[in-house]
Amino acid sequence: MLSNLGKDLKRNKYVYLMLAPVVAFYLLFHYGPMYGIQVAFKDYSLSGGMWNSPWIGFKYFEQFFDSYYFGRIVRNTVLISLYELLFAFPASILLAIMLNEVRQPRFKRTVQSLTYMPHFISIVVVVGMMTDFLATDGLVNHLLTSLGLGEIPFLREPGWFRTLYIGSGIWQHIGWGSIVYLASIANIDPTLYEAAKVDGAGRFKQIVHITIPGMIPIIVILFILKVGSMMAVGDEKILLMYNSATYETADVIGTYVYRKGILETNMSYSAAVGLFNSLINFALLILANSFSKRVSENKLW
Image 1 (cartoon, rainbow, N blue to C red):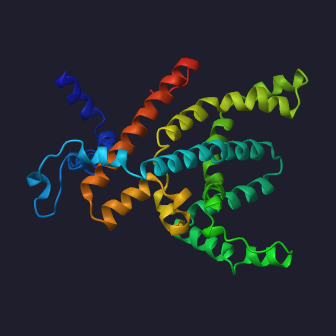
Image 2: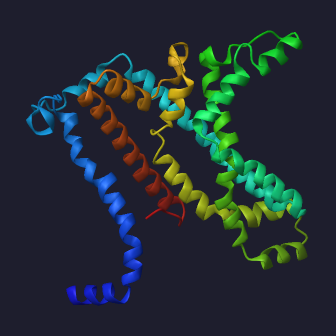
Image 3: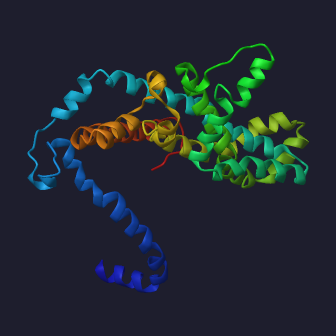
């Protein structure tokens, strides 16, 4: 076996050389830091360090489950993730299908460029734009006031937070997310469309019976990955968007970990919460992949 491995390394040395930086990246920044998981089971202190801090078992996990914030942050995390699955995930699929139906190349390229560009805008800039437009003295409220509808405190109203978060996410990523679906559509055999035309199928029936089935494999893979990261809601954007008035609907596990770990320097407690979150994501990934294997032939592994 070792001789065969040596021969393979020698024969494909340039391939392995290209692979080495990727492997090194994951070893250093993903697998290496996993030794820090033990902090969740210790009463960590800066003076004691990693190895000299005493073991306390599941103390911080129990504190988290019994805390006042447990139900709120889990509910908010799940709801925001479900809204993303219901609205943001299908948005890129619909855009890809609509772009595929456009027959004017110039118009198609223009729409693609306009929908791709927001993806390259920093989250900080996006939230800054939202703040300027949706502030009480912003453009949107000026328009509402001029129409006699009155001002709406978008950024201080808990009921608006999820709508703004999901809506801005769709605007920013819908074009970029459609790229992979357009690629899957491009791989569909054109003769299938020709045969459908001969049979009298219109554009809508071609979409339903050819385009969408041709996209199913990549849709399932991306859906499984999305479900596997449901609990990892984008806390960076939420940290920039939320305030004390919107904690009720905006506070999620990621922001809670940030406050406990960075602001309150309670490393062990935040590590326990983060580990709980990672385990839930891992379980969801396994369940989503198992369900996909049972109901279809498409799976991640």
